[in-house]
Amino acid sequence: MTLIVPLVALLAMGVLQLISGIAEPPVAEEVTIGYVDKSGGFEGYTQQDKVNLVRFDTQDDATEALVEGDIKEYFVIPPDYISTGVVSRYTLEKQLEAPADIATAIRNFLLSNLLADKVPAATVDRVEAPLNLVTTRLTETGAIA
Image 1 (tube, rainbow, N blue to C red):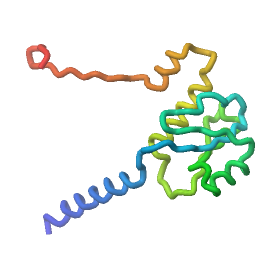
Image 2: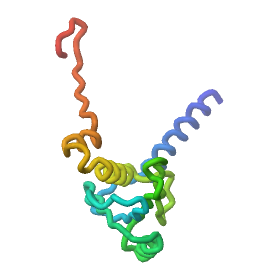
Image 3: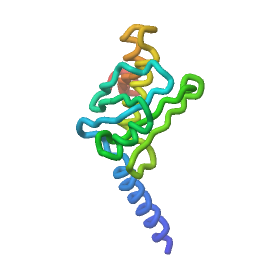
Image 4: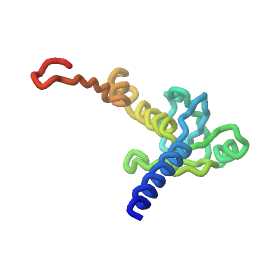
């Protein structure tokens, strides 16, 4: 009986790892997603790594493209985006959250457009990827291991 509880816990952790791996598959190939800009000013930087962003004039147009399979998903930037930061995402797939590559593409698209013409391009790049961490292990005497 004492071994059953740890075994069940390990089994549950394994199932959770399997499910999370299925729930967030990485973007392996070019994918096209749509967006509706009700705020204005989000027109550039529509190629984010392997994610191509296509603008739609209305949410109805984006929904139609989604249903017809022209785009994988779309998001809407509302008029009050600058003050709220809220962006609504629409997809036909059951997902707990957006795949990391899609979320990163949307984030970088928003950041690049917000900062365009306000800061140098190198600063935009650094805001999008603020850290390239290098770790060096030292010995107990302080020498590089």
